Image 1 (tube, helix red, strand yellow):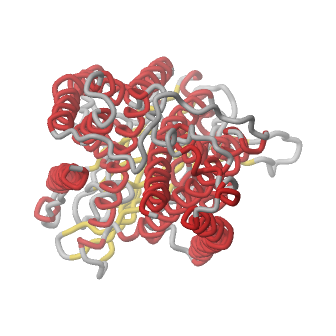
Image 2 (cartoon, one colour):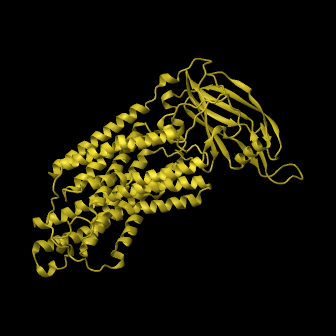
Image 3 (cartoon, one colour):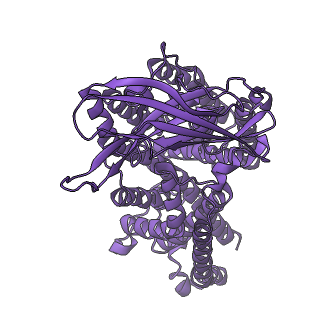
Length: 596
């Protein structure tokens, strides 16, 4: 029955993965035919947002600053992922027709009031940048610059200048746009240090040059942005560091635990009563397979952890297929939403099938908890962050329509899939086949030294696993909360696999130590020890924030909120992996004892 159930779960997981991949790949496929132009054809350009360079989550509408604006303003119809990503694309006065150069073209003439000058000056002080999209290619530029010391004798203090000229450098190949850059010319500025009304003429230039790069490779520029030799060396150092830690742990487990385990097995096989007393884990064979307390919650943790683990592997698959790449607007966030929704069936099936191995009733509560265990805190965090963003008029604030779609996805898609998985798990239930019979009354656990208790073991397990991934984790945080693009999914995948292996190995070792002192309450402890790495990850994110230049309330809110959700997900994933590794180990040793 167990073999049949495992095959059934594999079929369900494979079906869900293939469905998610086909759905997202189909929706994300780019069509080169939509990006062909004749000479003089208008190429779509949209302004997106502005924000301080040091706070990537703090972005505002482009026209919140008094730039030259068209009449009327037309918002581009955006996809679900673009809205989640905080993109708010709007039309602009810039006209960059295909292969038509322009020199000092006048955009508009504006007379700024004192309040508008002050608004621009505040943006320059905070090092604001602007973002646009030209033919779906991102481009950036700065709003202004600060001169810390004035060159005029007798004047003190910094001078603030607003850029009034932007130069667009565009590369093309045949009838397609390949690359675009925006350059704010420091030779054309206006002084906005004083609170006075000023007249400004905004201009722009466009320079076209031919390129040999093919259209399908035009996003390669953004991938190469991070692959400088120094970063490659750091990536390889992180990888080698992780491998060394794994080798050392494997040697430690082999020399200490496995050798001792073989000696224990030999003593059990010899049947010497005096020597047999030293084998502590044998005496708890009637309690080691006793179901854990709070069974429904435990099953929900396993169900949600399995769901999130499936989600991570699907995301890696999309990255390897080229669907997820830098500046594919909102593709990652949209993928997260849809994949999490589709994989709800895995959470329901896992929670229900595991619960039904120990009890026929109550599996419904395990399935409900599996649906709420991660989604509940995630929605609460998202609601709080959306309130903060709305109060500050940031583009991260989700419109009412998007919130409605998210809330409708839960009852209309996620909950039915979750329930279907739960019912399927119940229909294909099987009994838990333990190598040893469970006694009616639990054996009393002897007093434990402080270093054998759960908090100490969590610290050891979390620290060892965290030390193997800390360098790659730094790159991940720099990619998420900075402007260093992490474009090496292969290295990230290897690091994740290393983390999984380390978690499993450490879990097996700590479980054996726990059983050796006749402590049979290993179920929950294996989950907590495996998930403890996420606690160190969250602690490091606080350290990362303290060392960075991020400084606003909205940035702090989004940083803490999103990282808390990410680390909580890793807690569930690694806790699930840790438990299954320990379960396989415990089954093996007690099955071997029974056979002998």
